[in-house]
Image 1 (tube, rainbow, N blue to C red):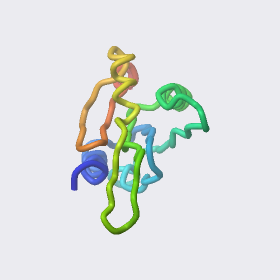
Image 2: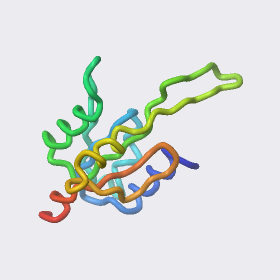
Image 3: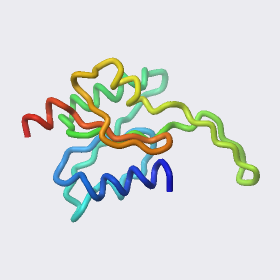
Amino acid sequence: MEGWGDVSLWVREHVKGARVLYVGGIQMYPLLGPGFTNTLFWARVEPKEDEVAAVERAAREHDVDYVVAFAPVKLRYGTRGERFDYRAPPTQALRAQRPSEWELVFASGHAEVLRAIKASASR
């Protein structure tokens, strides 16, 4: 259950009553947390928009506590002999660009969870 499944399970077990931005998919149900206490926001990336900038914009706009990123698929084949080729999730670049604002709290496969340092300290 590497990647999406591990991250979803971690969020369900560890994130409660938080504002969560998710990126790279529309798999939101598991991210609602225990007792459906989390508020979810989807980071919509417009065509030709820089993905990291879009995530950063959405995180600020919604004042989120966490960002959950599922790795985007850049290459995919059919249902037989499938080959999935993943890009790095945009949260990797976000952490590198803003290390004082975001910390990695969980990762599995091509998916990860960041916590907003400033938001978690003030809540």
